Image 1 (tube, rainbow, N blue to C red):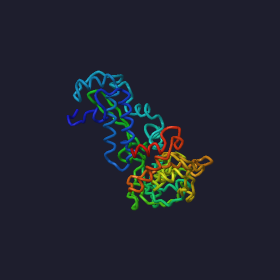
Image 2: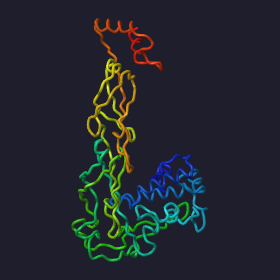
Image 3: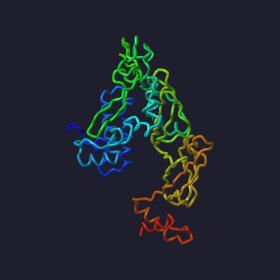
Length: 382
């Protein structure tokens, strides 16, 4: 083999100590990414896919891997499995079926699922589209309708996705859409199957290409849609709009549209599941005497009573003023954390007053449980 070939471990992105399972997992992931069906406009996808498959054929077989580790690409001829196949398999086709069965990529993957056995290429479902949608906390709470723009690849309107007119059966693949290649390598014969390069797997060759799509059958367009975001949705959730993705082959269903929801941070409220958190600040005098504060909610401002003797860090609740429970009844609570402010600068008069207060107080003034606010206050002045 040519000395310019890349190392098989490098091709699969694994170390030389990788297990068989790691090699299989890496091949499956890269094969889905670089398969020609997943990259119809990339002329180099087929070569990358062939390189991946060749590397996997060697490293997935213990005997072939051992020979490769010993000799590299300069493996002596000889040995191997039945019928000259050093892997004891039927080449790339069997690998496809072993990994993917009839699932393929979005309805048009490997093996028979791509080429339909012997009756032409099966139609391929459209790819999914994705768009990010940002909403604020109030919209996440009560739901919202949004106008969005999505760029999708659709079937050409002029040629209905055919790519042109006056077609004839491809002579290279005889209308099947697939070609099998047998290569004699130092490891024996290697049989691979892929989309026909002349008809791109369709089984037909276009004589007159469409002037609109230049024979591709696809055009890019921007589609405006009205989407509904349900009440109670959380940041990072995804919504699926069925059939709103890229068009598939003529006669095949389109892909789906996925909406990645991003909920912007609120200036005052923080979300905690179905609950909301709010921090209210009161000075130590009001916390000791009691007061009423105004608390922002998603339904408007509401009064909240701070009882006399409220301690720092106390959490109060406004029931039912949190987030709606997604696809369930009811709402969470609004939890109000009381932050008691202790003075950091005192005048002489203020200090004298507090010292007099300190002298006039006894243990009954303070909470019996734990360290109260005034315990902390006395410690601060000492």
